[in-house]
Length: 256
Image (tube, rainbow, N blue to C red; front, side, top):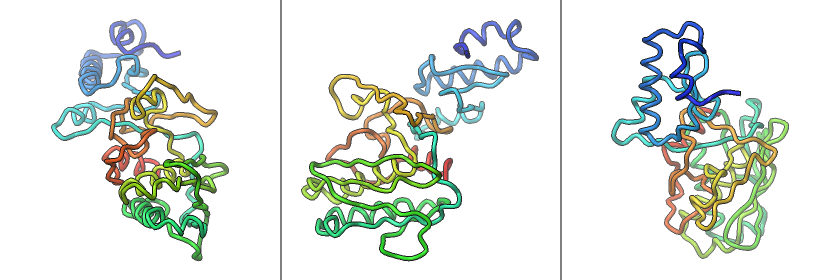
């Protein structure tokens, strides 16, 4: 089991082989920058002369300095163990007739598809019915003003997103946000505040845990969530824009 960074840096000569003064000083600066950028000290560790956050996200000195530059956000993203395979190049989203009967849900789907396609990912999305699909997702309705979906299996996205008909009374941007969010789950994203849903939902702290699918920090993003920091926050606000945050883009471009 890894130990906390503060302990490892303090015992550098005794614990790590080949740990010179230059490396030690560099790692101390990285850790200091990470703490200043908002990372919890308990989430930072040093292994084999390298600094990590979230156990598998390596942070270089340059990256830690960039986090402190004005206008640089340090937001959060987590993924599941299973992702969409590279063989999936076109994901077709097929709305049911009931889904299409709600004008804002229908428009929200088009906007959500555009959100993904504007990033130049390894796959494109298309509204069905259409041809050339290497994977399909059905868009259907549910009660309420929210949504639900699942996570990838066998290298393919989850096959269904459920969108609440109550969203018809919300703005076009909120519909875009919720549908983009559910498609995010279908291609492997966890809630960015899965470890404490109260960050975006309010109320008492609630931890979703690994849910049997993993909660792996995506390199380049922080391990801590903020209100409005990601489309993948657990709960949405009536003021959502439906657009990706910088953290969302970093996460998607890293994975796909």
